[in-house]
Length: 359
Length: 263
Image (cartoon, rainbow over all chains, first blue to last red; front, side):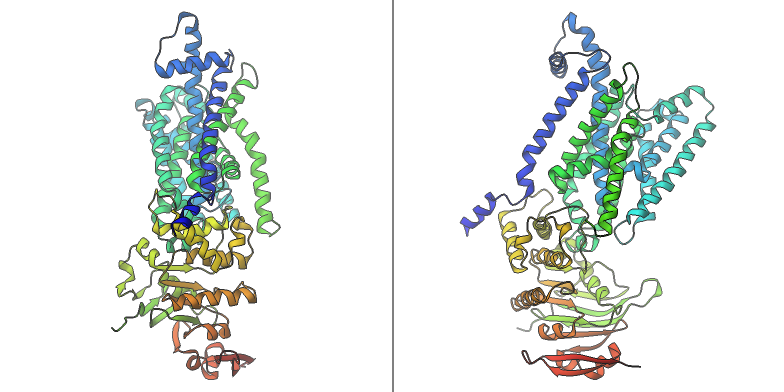
């Protein structure tokens, strides 16, 4: 009896046991490498070793000698916080994508596509236009979260049919919500009296990480960490939910409670990302699918891996956005859309084939 | 010692939006019994199973599980005793078949707890019983209907339930797997597991179930051993067909051959 139990403990039954250790470590190494590259490259490029040395000194709070002061300033005040913002936004968007795809049981679910990001943007520009964002650093993320949450609940009640959302219903409702919210944004912009505020709104709405710094990182970090930890707590529930609500209930899951928690968490994370970067599309669609191909669908591994994957993806996209054309900034949303758009079409065709039974 | 019924339904009603689906359904099921729920399409078989599984809330009446009102069980406690296999299980993402079966251990694991060796052992046993071991590493989204049905049953068996609810467990299965699955079910019943299954095939049900409950328009029309439930008169009334009733030469159970539709 004991002998057989030991055999089972050793046998590589679970994909978790097989992959979790090395894939997360590899992801972490790749993330650190990507961050060092992204911090080094730019209008003024620095050697990787200098970047590495200065970053380590920065983390350890060691003094920097005179010759490296200028480089240190670029790294500490401009590039590093921007790269950190990319890490956080990428992780948040990917996590909210994973959660929404599991919750809606629909591979096309993503905050940008179904309109949750637009809802967050409406909340955000309301906060800016009313001058709230200037008075408190919490106002903007809270407003984007509220907007994202309201939209998420509305979409949820419009699309859920017997525990899942038909593919086309979700996409069509997303189109409707995105269009309505976009016109709402136009309305708010056209009503704005204050020139400075409307400039601020335009800049934020463009979507991207240009000019994002430590204040943004500090603003969003608690949301990112809290959301990530809470969602990890629910990872097994997400797995079971994928078997269908009836089976999930019979496996001891409090389905209604879990679904609402997941909806709030996915909106929280999407809203927090929007607060920093405005709307950056497709990250929540592309990253979960690619990471799922590598580590499998088990959320206990998929969630941390997707957070890493989203961070890596957005660090590189942002690096492209600011280095592709010298001295010019290509919108981050432009880069992610160039990657994500074709991917979206590929997924759509694959799902159509699957539904016709050709796959 | 006098045994109590493990499962007892007392005047179950289900009428969402004033549409009557189930009406005063009452019966007792004893430990180790294999009960077949029969009746025409849309007569409330699946609804009844969903109510007992706790997936649907009845509009009236009480389900008693081990002498305790089902409403008073926590979802987790209930999942440790009662397993339910719905008619269809659809997966959206490519879990392997073994991972699906492993989810049957969920009610016995804490939130952060990793599966223990005994969980893997139980999963392997469940997969052997349902002849799904060779599918273990397959992407469960690519399985055929019958394969998925057996994987779903293995998932339920991995819960090691005292009560097993099955919604048309043999519909998608080929002949060999129908027989195998029903053999597994009867063997489980002999070990004391209470089984309640909705069936379409009257003859399969007659062979494997000790008791039958025949539903008509959401009410129990007849119940008891197959011999008393399957009569030309009851079948004529409930299914609106004339039948010839013979005897299964192999088992001695009644054997139904439909003749023609009544005008």
